[in-house]
Image (tube, rainbow, N blue to C red; front, side):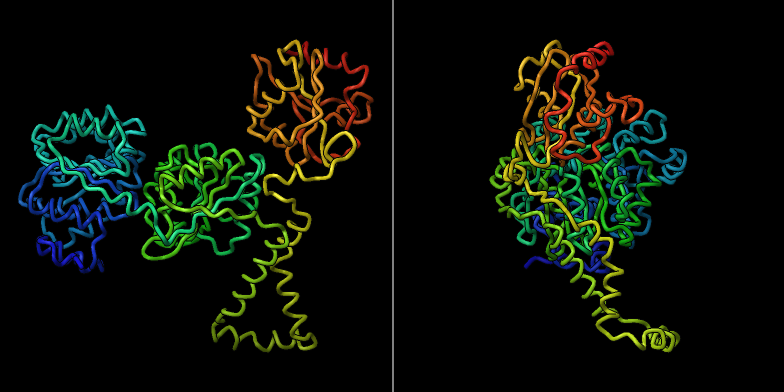
Length: 580
């Protein structure tokens, strides 16, 4: 078995590695470090996040530094501020015994003045994000004329973020460059083109396939209708007391919206995305690392700087388009020999994407049922019982309050006291899940039908009709499903008229459709929706004046079916059409 002590590192680095508790190198470190120590050359290292890439290039890089020279000898480029800071912190640990070694990090999101002053101390190693480095070059605050080593870390992510021109500019401005070390999770065409343009004949070391199928990770997926995705996330969080995880979303806006909704509901979560300033991002990470947060809601780019070994769950709020990104996400859990769970929330039509990931990642997914209300309550009950059973009150607490506690509950037997304590802990959960609906996809089609439609359906009015090009029920159904990604089976009893249309949707999907379509336009015309029953009441004067815009769903019954599209509705439709 290979050990760090077997590497021919300079003594100061070997001592630092020992201080850090490193003994056995990871696969990428075993392959790369000996090569870069004995015969430095251009290399490409392919390994996913969390496999020890920083030490793989960091230790050889510092090994070759001449601390007597007071100029920049090595440059490390990384895609994000978080990763840049993380690399810098690791370098400080590696070089803690190297007298005369100076490393510094430069990145956006903080005042540039302090970084310019830091550069005047003549560091030998710079860790930088491309944008801030170019800014410093343009200000002539830094010179790359004597840089011999360049490391491109997370090269695929830098290219995905649009840093191609920046990377090319930087590489062209390193005339003394002798070695280029490129590390990436994937070897796509963009990465290969950079290698061909700026690297000499390189050696390629790959351990990506070995790390994809981490046996410590349980891959699960839950199938729900698209409009129930958020409620499914909530239920899974409630069903997993003690969760310490990351919820991955696609966009910064999703990150902000979902985390805000969860925080308002009392969950200890926070967003992490690129629009947050550095101070806020650092504060979020500090709260996450000390476990003040049960989860963070993050985009893929923002999560690149997270280096935490205790993450229990990764939740894919939506699957990524690229199966390789899935391996990045899932690799955040199950680290350091610990087990982890990676959960994906999918709609029925996304099951094919699960199969694709299974083929590419060579792993097996397990389909799980979304727990019902009783299961959630039961799970949280057992969690509370376990917490009580394993609690260890401090001695001084018992000494001070034991008499008062005993006197207050002397006439109450143990079972009644326990029942009341548990009820206080669980009453909000019990109330929330007393009549919880089934979120598993497919249940709606199994519901018994009432005359003319689903028993729990709501009839909606929409201000689009034949004169807008909606000539058939099929065209209206296509517009609704494509605009909202809702399942077609949830919609029925479509009536299309000249200037408006009506359709039924199950109650669980009505609010989702109304909220989603309220921001849409059809051929330049703003879409408006209302509950047909509410519309009838307003026309008869029973509900006061009409409000502008769509009205959120607040409940419905089968009484709404068949109403709102009878004779006389054409005049009202004309008013909506004239507002076009």
